[in-house]
Image 1 (cartoon, one colour):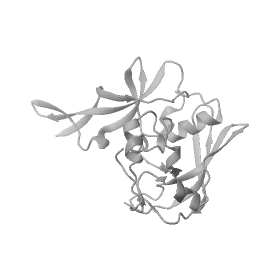
Image 2 (cartoon, rainbow, N blue to C red; image 1 turned 180 degrees about the vertical axis):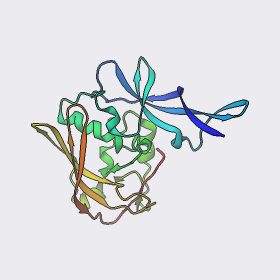
Image 3 (tube, rainbow, N blue to C red; image 1 turned 90 degrees about the vertical axis):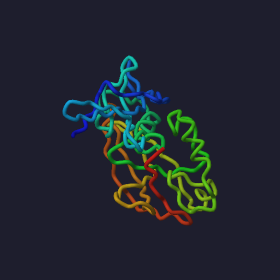
Length: 221
């Protein structure tokens, strides 16, 4: 028995909003793939479980999925980044709780609860509502989102954006680099160099202890 991904069997469930960095005629959507299990003499089609394992971000043309995205490198040529703000929205595809879990190397951005707006979750309000249910009595922050008082107690700063001669730089706080750890990750102050066509170089600058909470990875939005 073997499983194959059927490119025509993608059910697009969310059209991502705020992706103005896409070239004209292209959109991004979050979809659930249909898996064909091939058994001699039979074909069984089913939706996978857990759902998050079969959800992916897709490039859409004419409303149809044409490319699966598991790495930002796959979007090079499909995007045109014209401002530092666009660069931030672009790199957040890999780090937002609404989309990051679909990437081969998921990361999360450390942010205050007050920063969780429509743009932060690419229009997925059900994700924003889930994040806002953060329990102050539980020290684990599985979406990377801190209560505002925790953010201020740690004297953290939000993303810093800059235009350069070769594109843009985004400085922000990320975690998830270690891999394989279920909880209590380490945050890093990180710089990302972003070219106008979507190439990203990421470099860790400084390990950043965060007092009072433990950063965890939540692999389902």
